[in-house]
Length: 154
Image (cartoon, rainbow, N blue to C red; front, side, top):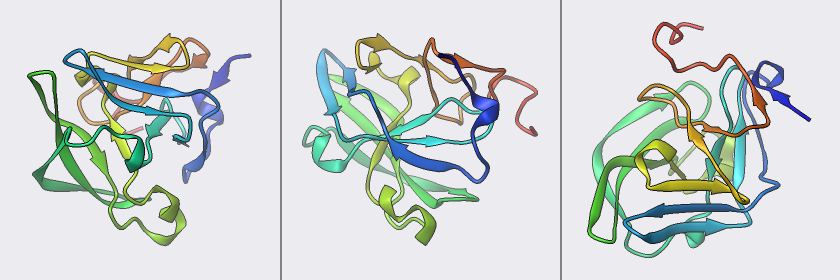
């Protein structure tokens, strides 16, 4: 049954992902988890967060700069390096999220469009449009989706 992103709440809700997650770069699996969380926010495809222990050792390289999420707090960024490939600022985490999102502490999210591939179960996901949001689009989602040019103020 289709899921409309317009039925998602604001502020966002965190829930377990019903499907396993796999992320690949440079011919390597950089993350694989059956314990991922998904964040659901009005007008966005779900953002997937992987527990740090399910991310391959050494693939995350911290980089400078942060952003501020009005709900979750300050995000730190990482380059993802695997198989001789470096994807710049391709992952982020909330090391010290606000109390309402404490369960996301240190979980890592990957921009699917900056990876060679990202999967939920056996479905390869599409990246949310735009260069800021990191939603994972699947065939069971109904939009329109925030992220495309002209939608930033939605």
